[in-house]
Length: 427
Ligand SMILES: *Cc1c(COP(=O)(O)O)cnc(C)c1O
Image (tube, rainbow, N blue to C red; front, side, top):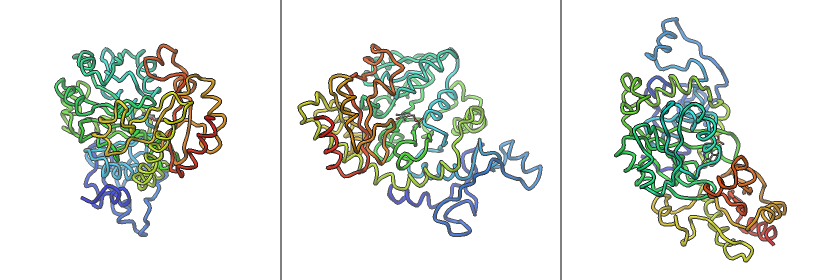
C-alpha cells in the first residue's frame, strides 16, 4: 500500500466494491474521480436530494437493502461517500460514516449503542459539549453518565458494569491535554465486552492510529484538522471492525442480518437516518480537499506548538505551560509512544487569573480570538469563560479548566511572528 500522504492526495486507487452493507454503494464509473468521464481531478459535487431509478423493482430493491444505490441524500450521497472512502483509505477500519458535525458523530454513536437504564463510562475531562451531551441532554432520557479519570484504570474498571454500553474518551483531551493510554483501556474494555470509543479529533489518524492501538470506534470532528483551514463543520465515525456487535444489546438485531457490519448498518438504516444529522455534499467536497493536505498542515502546526511551548515556559509572567511535547510533561512518554513523535497543535498556559487572561487576549494582533482548533490560523481563547461557561467553578475544577488558562491552537504561520505577537500581548 502507498504511503499516507500519497493516499491522502489520490485516495484509494481501487474503488470500493460494494460499500457498507445497507448503505452507500461503491463508486460507480462516472462517480469515481479516477474514472470521471471528463477526467476531473476533483470529485463532483452532487447537490441533489434524491436519485432516480430505472424501474419500480429497482427502487424497491434499494429500499429493501438488496441493491446498493443512492436514493436520498439524508442517508447517502455520492460526494459524501467519496469523503468516507478517502477517510477509510487513511484511517483504516471496515467502514466510515461522515456526518454534519463532530457532535453529530458523537451523539449518533451514543444513541445507537445505549438506552434508558444503561450507562456510559466517560472521561471526566472531555470536550465541553460532549460532557454536556451526556450530563444534560441524554440524562433526562434515562442514560447515566459515569465520569471517571481515564488514567486511573481501577476507577474505569470499577465503573463498568453489565449496563455499560461503551467507554468513551479522547486520545488527547482538550484543553487539559491529558493523553489516554489507549492499549491499556482497550485491554480493559475487551475483557468486559464493552466497546471502546476514542474521540481522536486532536491528533487525527495521521498522528494517532487509534484503531491499531485498540479503539473499536474512532470519532473525529472533521471541523478541525481535516476541513483544511476551518472551512466547514463535519464529523466522522470510523468502525475499526474489532468489536463483536452481536454482544452489544442494541446491535443484536442488526448483527443477525449484517454480522460484523451491524453497527454501520444500524447507523445507516436506522439511527443516523432517523436523527438526520447528514453532511451536506458541498461540505463533504471541501473536507475531501482538506484531507489531501492533512499531513503537511499537522506537521507544521505541531512544530509551531512545540516552538511556542518552549518559548512560553521561559517567560516570567507565565506560571505554567501545558504541552505534551515538553519532556517534563507527565504525559510526554505516553504521547511519544502513541503520537508518532508529534504532540498536537494545542497548548495551554497559565496567567493566574481571568483578568490577566482577558488583558493578554485583547492585546493580540495576529493571533485571532476565536473558538475552534486546528485552523490554518493560530487561535487563542479563555476556555473557562467561553466553551466551559455553562459549568460551575467546582465542576471546572474537576474538569481541570482553570480561570487562569489560555488555550492556543497553533496554525501554520511563521513561528517568529507568533512568538512576537504573544510576547507583546503578555508584556
Ligand atoms: C470540536 C470537538 C468536538 C465537536 O465537534 P464539532 O464538529 O464542533 O461538532 C468533539 N470533540 C472534540 C475533541 C472536539 O475538539
